[in-house]
Image 1: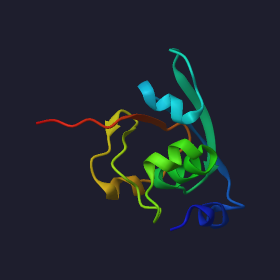
Image 2: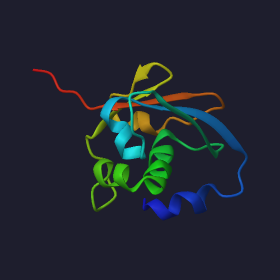
Image 3: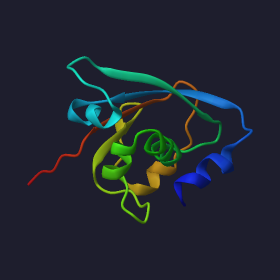
Length: 113
């Protein structure tokens, strides 16, 4: 799905408000400088998924887009997504429908050995 199709598909639906927190150095990709926390509310069409939210954020923040999505618009392994305190570990979980008051945290990707 291309970024520009997200808005068309969800246009005209009731909006829900979700809280987005961007952690650590990822804040720079959201045009934020400094040490303070970056938390903002984002209104998205009801029925939208976590992936829809990521695509909307990518449209709004080009630096995030360049790092989070490849040229074919597929999500890359750039950051970890936490939904209501639970790490999203499977791509299918990005299809979870967002609800009013949900909390999404974007953290730098981490790897173990």
